[in-house]
Structures are given as structure tokens and as C-alpha cells.
Length: 571
Image (cartoon, rainbow, N blue to C red; front, side, top):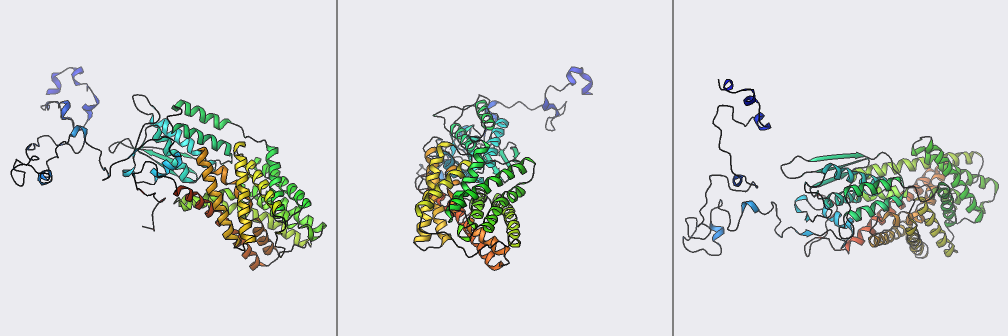
């Protein structure tokens, strides 16, 4: 036998190819090794043994229609298997090339990276422009697992901080493309982040995922993450290696909150007191509302430290303001407007940030994330309702005269209300842990929103829901303009500014109607509160989209139109 003719060393496989099923067995004549030139690099290269007539394209061969000289259409009249003149299999053009060519995008600051990445995310994969390399890597190429891990960690901080799903995907897409992974596809849901990278059409994809388990509101950390992404996607200003990006990300995670706990508690009281003045309260109402909100905030912190879910935290935080309002009703006349105390406490608790993010995800086509966010808002709202209703039922049993017909607000003090709205926005910004440099801008944005709402709803006689939508639209527009100017997130300029527009009074009167067995009146007020909340969310999103209508599509050919978020007209 052939196997007996050699020694043990001859029987040992020399390489892993000896184990392949396609290697001829020992004793069979081995085929000649192919040369380097016989390895095609494209599936469109001509197979071995196929010969073409070099004269066919010139019109002088048998493939020519006329058999004589080549005209301008002679290439089209040749055989379908004959490659056109000038074609080189070693330097073939890329597959799936559009008719107008593939535009080249320079990832510079000619437009904010959010708009650049969002534009490319809304394109089909085959139509996305080829990027230029932004961050340098070594000769062996980018470290794919580390780039994907860094991308997921950045996306986790953004999603936990309240960013919309599309903005998180755009940030993840920007990071991977900056490090050379252009064939990447990020996916964002409410609690899960995943990203897949495929080196080529024939290679296996590499997929990684990360779960978001904890969420926190810290817009200072959010702004720091945005600065990191902006530096990664901008090669002209700074070069950020993977090690440097990991180091900066670790510093962002370790940074302490800019405001201590007592400042946050005082801001909660200032927010509730300003809201009570906004709906008609006086000095005494301001003090009582602030005290109730601060007590509720401390109780919520205690529940959080004991590990209770956020549902019970909202329920406990809503009880002290309601109890304060009922106590004020039992000890003072109705002219003091104790109902404004409860309304101020509701302003401090209504989850406006989560509501805006949920509606924004739904409008941009991320329905799974939108449904989860809105369900979270519903649970928070039910917790607030349960806490307030419990106190209102107790007040009714004690004989408190709560008047559901006391529809405020008086119209004879617009200056005081504008100042109260700006103070409310300022306190809300501190609660959101915003950077000090953004507090002034968002405070002015909240004051403008209240001026627009008051001019339309009270002076112009327009529907309060419509006036709220217009004011929220201006908040979204100005917030996007501020964020584009500073190359940062728009949330610090938007979220606190919608505080004066929240439906605190409608929510209170709805709950009061239910507590006094006037279910029809209560449901009507609650439906108004829901409509107002949706008007705020839709208005903010519409204002943001309007700001993008006037921005040039980065990297698109001349005359190209901006793509919709997902499908158009359902098909």
C-alpha cells in the first residue's frame, strides 16, 4: 500500500488543508498549483478556459453586426459574454453601483454628525455613500470586537440618558464608520442594543449586544458623550484612538453629578411653587406647594434606596402635595386656592421627558421602543393618579370642600406668570442635571413657550391644545437650532422648556371629578390632559423636523430630496 512506503513523518499532515474533503487522497495525481494570476478577485472575472475575441469590440470580428469598422454602438452589438473595452477584472468597479454613481462623503463639520448619520441610516444599504477613513488604525485593520464594544457602551449611555432610538442608532453608526466599519447595522430597542458588522459579502457577520438595565437622568453626562462622538467623527480637530475613547468613556461614567442632593430637593420645591403661581396661587400657596414637593422628593429618594420600583416612588411622591392642599382647604378659605398646591405637585411629577421620547420614537418608525416608552409613561401616570386619588378620597371623607369649578388662571398678571414659567424651567433644568452653560438658553426657551401659549390661548381665544402644540413646536425648533450650533444633544434645550406646558391643572380636575363621583367630568378633564400631553410631544417632534427641512442633505447629489424616516404612505 502507498501508506506503508513512507515513515511516520510522511504520514503526518503538513497543513490544515490535508483534512479538507476537497484535497485529493494520497496516491492520486496532484493537480498543478495555480499561479498567482489565476486567482480572480471578483465573481465577475472571466473563468479559466474562456477566450474572447479581442476584435469583437472593434467591430471587425464575427461578433460585429456589420462586419466592418466599429461605430459608436459596436460594443452594444457585440456578444453578451464579451466584456466591454477597458474592463479589467483585477480592478473591477464595485457591484450595485447606482446610475448616478456613489457620492463620497467627507465626515467633516460641514453638517452636524446627527444629520449626516441619520441621512445615511435612512438610505438602503446598497445606496449608502462610501465613507472616508476618519480615525487611523494599524496595518491589520480595525479591531472589530473592540470597536463594537465601544459603540455599544456609548449607545448604552445615550439610551439610558433618554435619547430617542433614531439618535442612538445614528451615534452608533457614526462611531463604527469613523473606525472603518462601514458595513455595520445598529439596532436599538427599549432595553437592548445590538450591532452587526459584515466585513464583505462572503464573510460571516460579527454581532454584539448589550442590555440597558439602569436609567438615569444626567444631561451633563449626555453632553460629554456627545462631545466624545463629535471628536471621534471629526478628524480635522483631534485624533481619538480606541484607547483614548475608552479612557474618556470611563471618565464620563465616573464623573459625579454637577448638583448635590439638597440642591435637587430644593429645585423640586421651586418647580412646584412656581407651577402653583403659574396657575393662580399666591405667596402662601407657593410656600406650601414647595414644602409638599420637597417632602415628596425625600420620600421618593427613601423608597429608591430601599429598592422599590419607580411606580411606588411616583405614588409616594404624589401624596404629600395632595395632603398639603387638602390641609390648606380644611384650615383656610377657598380664596387661597389650595387646589393650586396639588397642581404644582403634579407639575413636578408628570413624566414629560419620557412622553416626548416615546412619541418621537413612534413618529420616526421605532414602534417597539415607542410602545415600551409609552407603557412606562402610563405606569408612572397611574402611580401619580393612585397617590393623588388616595389623598383626595381621604379629604372628601374629612369634609374638605374641593371645588371642581375653580378653573384658573387669572389673566391680570402676565408678567408674574412669565417669570414663574422661567423659574419653573430653571428648576426643571437643575433636576435634569444640565450643564450650567445650557441653563440660561433653556430658561429663555421656556419663557418664550409660555408667552406664545398665553398669547394664543388667553388673548387670542384659540384652543389650549392647539396653542400648546404651537408653543411646543417652537420649543423643538429652537432646541434643534441651539443643539446644531453647539454640536450637542437637543434634549438639554427642549425637555425643561416644555415644563410650563405640562397639563397639571387638567390632570388635577380630572382626578378631583373622579374622587367626587363625577366620572363624566373627570374623564373629560383627563382626556384633555392626555390630548395636551400628546400635543406637546408631537409639537416638539414637528419643530425638530421642520428645522431639518432647511438643512442640506449631507453627501447627497445635487437635487436629492431628504428621505422619510421609514416607509411612505404605508407601502
